[in-house]
Amino acid sequence: MKTFSDLVSEVQAPGRCHHCGGCVTFCTAINYGALKLDEDGKPVFKDSDKCIKCGLCYVICPEIDELEEEIKQQVQWNAPNGRIIGLSVSRAKDLFVLEKGTDGGVVTSLLLHLFDMGHIDGAIVTKQVGVHRQPWLAASREDIIEAAGSHFDTMHGLASLGDHYSTYSPSIFGLDPKLRGNLNRIAMVGTPCQIKSARKMQALGIVPSDFIKYYLGLFCTSSFIFDKEKWKRVEDLAGFKTDAVKKINIKDEFLIHLKSGEVRSIPLDELSFAKREACNYCDDFSAEFADLSFGGIGAEMGWTTVVIRTPLGRTIFRYASDSTLETYKLENNPKFATAALEKVLSSSDRKRMIAEINLQKLKTKP
Image (tube, rainbow, N blue to C red; front, side, top):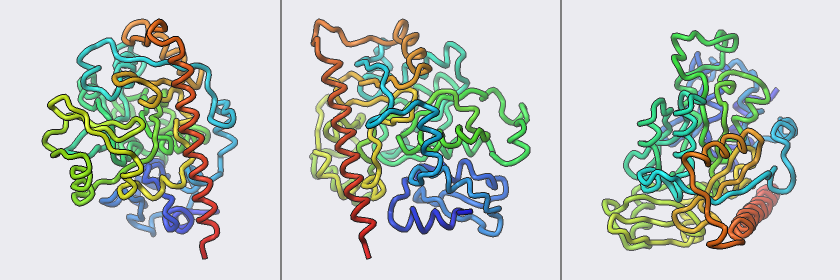
């Protein structure tokens, strides 16, 4: 049976580790301190002697093919870009959420709707700290609103769940209600690699994946890592200073929204110096294993493209649309939905093609 040591040699060494945090979060031995995320977010041994070599971390890694067919059946995945049962271009009705959120603030609105209706007790999100995002388990309406906005560097969203729940016995048989409090139903917002890792755990039926009731995926061209030097290069490219930034998001370009109302843009190809190496091998742009996928690609400024992938996703989106979301009006552009879908599919095909080329190059390396 392959273990974390094999992940190090097969995934980390070639540069394919996404730092999604899945292996650490769902480590069967996490109560005993076998694995941890280092200060750069990389999974490492905390104490190799405490690893029970169960192989769980290996099979749930999004870069490993095991359980691939199981999770495809689970969400009824269809080639080439996953199951798609609907598409919408929407935005938040609440002007405060619209202003604070990314693009159209749809993810924040949907989380608030689920929370207000009692469908979730919390959500795995990320929170802005300086110019970086950190994982956070939002347990209140205020928490969800505070976390609104785009991530633009890497995030280890799954790790926040591991901080609260363990997968090792006795948790598998039932977590003490005093320990888990009111967080029995959680919505997970994550990148494609994080969604895939959590879906693998769901296929295995192991705690804490059963707490995740809704999978909300984010379009992901790539993740960027900005240290001080790289961020200075971004400032120079777009001609701004960090203290002037209001928020950042990604559409066809890297967009920096300034407090003055001005928007500076950088072509994504010019940010290759900050791109995580593992993103060169990722073939999922639109979070194909999520219930709903979200992003700015294909939508006008201030709107969000929403890909509906599962019946569950369709249900929660429909009810949220009735109360908290506004749909782009057909009379403004009769072809808006078709154009948005074409853009998503085009971006997905491009990312998949690049990943295939890079993987072939990796295999032929001496």
